[in-house]
Image (cartoon, rainbow, N blue to C red; front, side, top):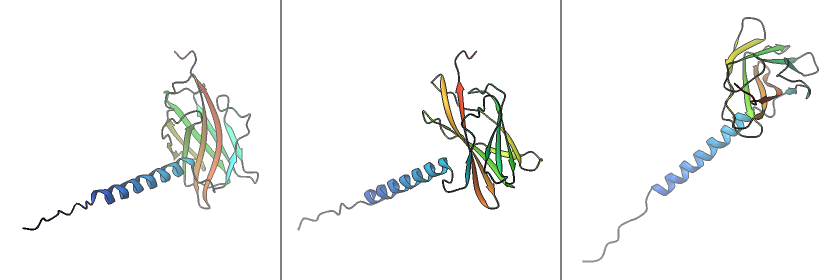
Length: 165
């Protein structure tokens, strides 16, 4: 009786390749979604504006602006935080605020804000995650969905946990 070899081609290797490609594409999508639409119009708040002291405004220079306020102050991690966004000349349909740690990745933190009933004003409660460092710099983006497309306001926030009770 002649020796018959079994076919050892397995569908597992092509399946693993497809899964690895899918994971890579999902990772790229996630990174892009964390950064907002980099081609969207944006305005930055002045570097000397301190969200720990007052609300900050990012002006587009054409009558349009995004104003961000965080309270209560001082702004701390692991404490309930009220976010309020006021817009002028933008007519947003929706708003989100993306908090990203500058010194280290602090997880996905992008609360959706609800309309307050006042035109162009959105608010929501949120919380910043605890950082193992005593101080943290946050890159804060207000992401607006407008009839003309996405628009961003860029802000900076520093938190300090020294002497926290």
